[in-house]
Amino acid sequence: MSEKELIEKTTINFPKPIGIKKAQNLLCYLSNHLPADVSGKIEYFINYLYDSKIKSSLENKGTLKVSANIRNFEVSMAFDSFESISYDKDSSFISGIKFNRVPAWEIEDYRTEIMELWDDVRKSIENYFR
Image (tube, helix red, strand yellow):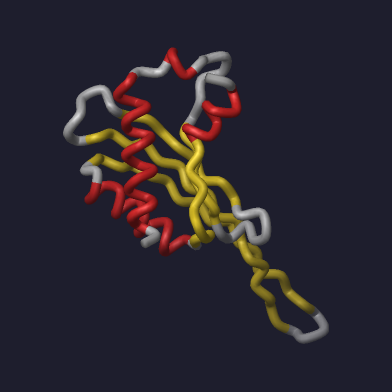
């Protein structure tokens, strides 16, 4: 499998970008529907910039980042981690996730349980957006 195909296999793009609340809901949904243990970290950096002309602070939209570890509850050795993909038009949203790839590994180097987990997460995310 080519590097492009590996990237496609380990990347899940959302049909529409989501914000912080939906990101929290998505992690819970994945845990409930796989079923899986999901441990996540959600970061949201935000600025409040004072505008001297209007004598008030303005909210500058922040940057949302999500990283998580996921372990399939029913399949031993089926665990991996992923990070969010920032939405290119507004960094306060995410537009997908990407599983961490090991440099120089080919698809054949990954265990079957891991690749099945990627597929299961993809199906769950598709269902989440329906």
